Image (cartoon, rainbow over all chains, first blue to last red; front, side):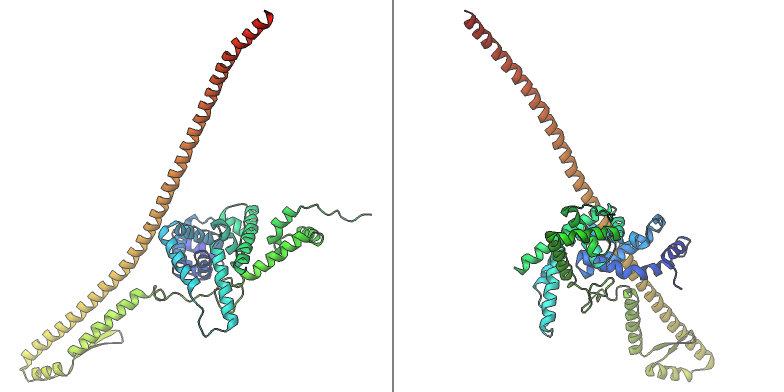
Amino acid sequence: MAATDPELIDRCRRGDPASFAGLATRWGKAAYALAYRLLQDAHLAEDARQTALLRAFACREQFNGSAAFSTWLFRIVVNVCRDWQRSSRVRDRVTDRSAEVSNSRAPAVCGEAVLEGSETARRVAAAVRGLPRPIREVVVMRHYMELRFADIAAILEVPVSTVKSRMTNGMRLLRETLEDDES
Amino acid sequence: MSGPREEYITCEAVREELPALLYDEAPNDRKRCLQAHLRACEPCRAELKAHRRTMNLLDQWTLEPGKGRATFPWTPRPRGKRFDGLRPVLIGTAAALIAFAALSMWGVSVSRLNGQWIVSLGHQQQDQMRAVDTLPHGQRRAVRSIVDDALDYRLQELLVALEADLAGVVHGEQRQRLLLASAVEEVRDADAQRFGAVIDALLRRQVEAERDVERFQAEMIAWKETLGQSLAPSTDEEHVKENS
């Protein structure tokens, strides 16, 4: 039977750093997915995943077990993404890549339905990217990462009511943007 | 006997709770209450439908084609990043292959069998060694010993150089990571300073604004007093006129 997260982190603290690899394997993909949805850049998302895991390993003594390991790791991922989004270099790069994506055409071999689907996907990605950062974080974590409102509140360290309110605003803003695109 | 009273809930409160209802996170009693409101309220029902449409659109942005809302999707790693973790090993292996190829061109082949390095000579060297075979026994042993030492030294030198290359690559990776971490820290510090400066400026403006208000109040008081003084004699004069 696979060891649980608290068991692995406990072993890691007792001087078995290799047990952290189990946690990294278990949560690495999710950390990447979260970073990718927030940054919308595969290179940056991969770097964010690695940086978050390194930070988590370096700060493993600070993990007090009051929340789940995933909550703690996702908080680190969100902070790493925020740090990078503030950096103008990263911001420019994301903007450039977004422009590339929005200008690129789907491969000619794709069927009409796939082409249409990918166009909608690009529009949705652009709409999510256009959301204010606090709202975007909530929408990504609730809709795409399927985290519960209470978990998101723990990750962002805000009340659950704030998370729900941001989600409501996010849905409204997305609807306005996507409906504008359609018209 | 009447049933349990339904809790009154405003449209605004219902709309705040719609995401919880749509993502199935509302507690059962709250859900019943919301559904009761929705049955009776057409605008809120329309809002719910609009949210559902938005959710369906959001589902279109998948990271893996063909899958719906993927929680932990797989995405191909970008080109150039794919072998990041193996880079030192790949570079070391490539260096070793180049070195072995160079030795092969020189006519020497190096192989490993049962944990022992085996060095075999090429045709040219084998001819030379055959010529050595014609030498007297004492000289032959001395020449063979010199050749063996030279080959062994060359092999050791090669391995030391490879290890140094490998250490250099690993060190380079670590340095890059440290540089990245320090760059992140710098950006954070710069942001903190920038925001600190903005906050300081705002505080200064607030203090200035408070001073302006105080000055304005003082001016108002002074004006009132001046006005009072300027009005007072005229009133007295009118009284005097009326009395007269």
